[in-house]
Image (cartoon, rainbow, N blue to C red; front, side, top):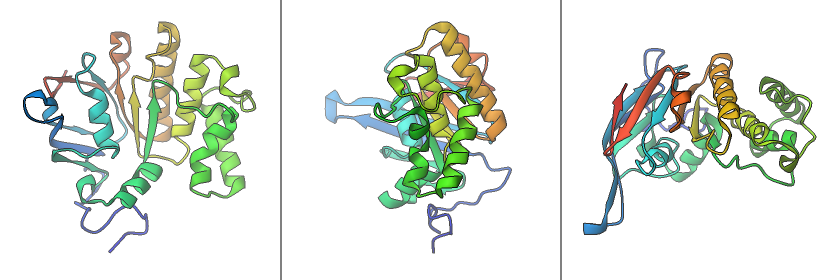
Length: 243
């Protein structure tokens, strides 16, 4: 039996309540390659993300941060272990259910911004709503609200090439919020920005978590940004430890 959200099958549900964490990662293993040349990115990683918190994930380059985000976001499947998001066990979902989960419940923010060059800022923000076939009036209202939230209310008609790096990342944050996600995953969102702009973007994420009530996991190697997080997790030798 499938719930009316379209993303959760009866087999996938493990129970959810206000006391349940938004994300539970249990004994996650993932490798690339086989045999002697295999690279073990994750070796039993386990942790939880509570609802409404901003958590920073740090680790040296190549430590597996992106791999972990991909597994949590349903972009890849683990070799062993499981990821439970808002009561839904990802390992119990088929490809179509994973697609719906990614579309409706998870927002992604990338280091490279990922904006469509020929679309305006407003059109980029509205892409997820178009894919969901939202009512045009609802879509326009949501886009306007989000552009205002990220401080770009007057830049909706500009294309990415006409915006600074910091402004492009703000557009990508607004786009990630379009479908009211429960979870935000950000992979080095300030990696292409100067220190001052990167700090402003991280402060914006902090404000967004509070205003939108989402849970956010932000991978970063910038020590200046770690102080803005509620908690800091470190990925080292394939395992996650809390600081």
